[in-house]
Image (cartoon, rainbow, N blue to C red; front, side, top):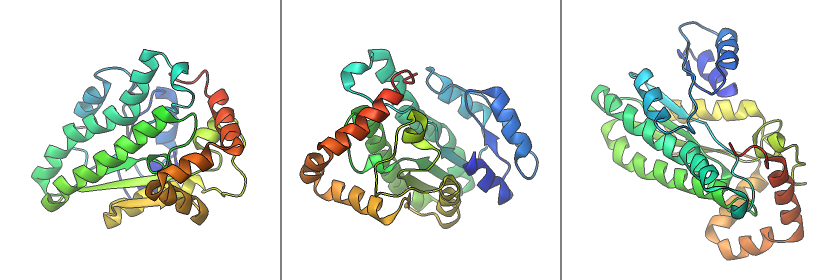
Length: 249
């Protein structure tokens, strides 16, 4: 994971968490430095975020990067699948922050970093659930920053666009929309480090054209909806949704 590698390269003792214990152990062995820990957790399970936070008590920095794709029409999801997407993408980051930041306030330092997406600024077809979680995460992080920054704890957003060999399109095996460019995974890792070291409100990881389109989607959603509802946008959305049809868990 490029985020863990970027932080370990700066001397951080990293606490790694994901669903696969073996993959976590292998990643920990490859990271520079020592003192890294592995805490397997499935954040889609109720109570998992609270248990993880308790095991990671004393953490100086939280990087909330877990996510489920949430691609497809709303009626393609069962009620449980909707709950799981909301739990992983939005509820878990909120609960982890809630559990960890009081100790940061006592120390007078700390950083909460939430990895969001340009999908938290501009909606797209077949992504209503994913958009909802990322719009929500963006609002949560910005509001929480207003509460905590005056008390010495930073809150930052990292918002990637299309990332080559990673993200929704890569996981779905779908072709990227032409002409929009991509970012490298390593740029996401560097963005997280920048957010921490400079206490940035938000670091966007995307070529200029993607950033411009996302901003346009925020200031003129009616036009953005019409444009993205066109045939090209629908084809790209269908390809992603098809690739994730068996991966809503």
